[in-house]
Image (cartoon, rainbow, N blue to C red; front, side, top):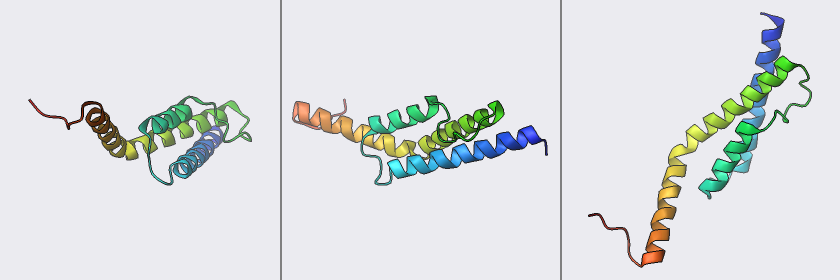
Length: 106
């Protein structure tokens, strides 16, 4: 296997594993606030690869950054239905509280 590719691959796997573990720990009690969840995912997608500071070369930093992004997207995708349900539940609660009655269809 090409040495550069191997460096990239190991850094990507490492970045992915660390990011997945961070997100799982952050939301171990479930997703309570959809906005907080989305902000956490956004932060993982935009931040520099700080989870692997020992990866110094450009190819390793690229691999780590892509692993972080991949883990964040996979985590979001795995929890998207839960976030949708919470968003809808919050909308209905807000509407019911504001108007004193549940949503009615026309």
